[in-house]
Amino acid sequence: MQQEATQAREARLGKAVGPVPGAVGGVVLLLPAGEETSTRRPSPLSATALRPLARRLTRAGRAEGLVTHTVHYRGRGWNGAQAELARDARWAADEVVRRYGDVPVCLVGVDMGGRAALHAADHEAVDSVLALAPWLPEDDVAVSPEPVRQLAGRRVLIVHGTDDRRTDPELSFRLAGRAKKTNRDVCRFEVHSDGHNLHQHRSEVAALAVDFTLGTLFGHPFSRPLQDALAAPPPIGLRMPLAVGFGQSLGL
Image 1 (cartoon, rainbow, N blue to C red):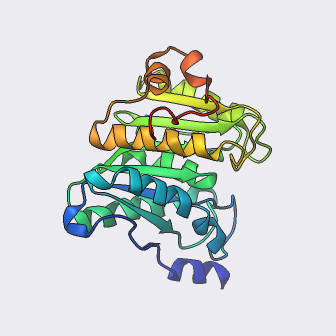
Image 2 (image 1 turned 30 degrees about the vertical axis):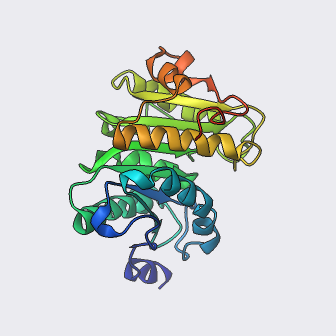
């Protein structure tokens, strides 16, 4: 019965944050955290936690017509091969195309939403992916490695706290390394001494998100640290430290 209830629910986009639809130049889809296995309704707190980032992004991208939507999943669980959160992320990208037409999309996911963003990168509307402390499974390459081929042609940024106790930062490092072999536009920043929620350096993380989003969606020049991270070979560009105070001198 509980599984049937999950299937009956539908994903939806939260209220748009940003300009009126006629002025939309690009869209960020925010993908909240989830759980590995669950058929329960999504936690409203997960979506609420993304509101400050949504406001920060749309304020920075107002001149270009940037709109953000939080994706409200049907349920909170990934649920194995069903990959339900990734399916909802793809639906959300379809919905953006239906509402706004041919506009570039950046997927920004947190925790399990980061995994959903990485998986849904193959949607034709998606230009870039930002995964914040992504939840990833133990990478048994011999059995079923986490896919990276769908990241080809997309610009990808992963940000992870080195003291994360919920999602293993080494797993995101190894995934970034595999992705970098076929896609040079992959980089990863480490937030030293920060945990899963990246609260200690939330301002720097938000500034990096603005830097990446405006650069990938609207062609703004990247900051020097982001340029260096994208250009550097592994492991340098995949263990780039996020400096304290990042973005302050850049006005991000």
